[in-house]
Length: 117
Ligand code: FES
Image 1 (cartoon, rainbow, N blue to C red):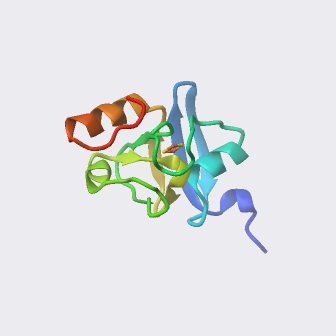
Image 2 (cartoon, helix red, strand yellow):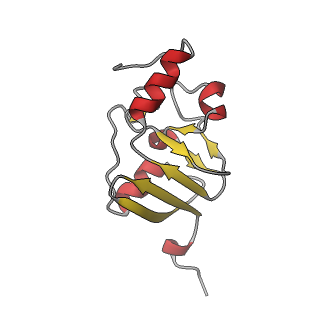
């Protein structure tokens, strides 16, 4: 029997200002798009992994593929920052959303590009 689409993909918990929501995200889909498809509109402007408006931060273990992002640095990854607009999951994840101010501050502290800050 085929597995319903709602039960496939990685389990991604979004910790938003309005509470926690759990969605399923296939390894081929950007997390932001999967959230929208579940009725969760996360912040975004560029949708290219450039502006940091969608920034989130990983809580605990987890891996993402940010190869679709225009600008994403090893330092971002080491600090647990994720750009959901262009991030595909490589594992189950817990992501704290609405982290654009924190990510911009982090980028500035590390001498990296921080658009709109
Ligand atoms: S919306 Fe611009 S980096 Fe994600």
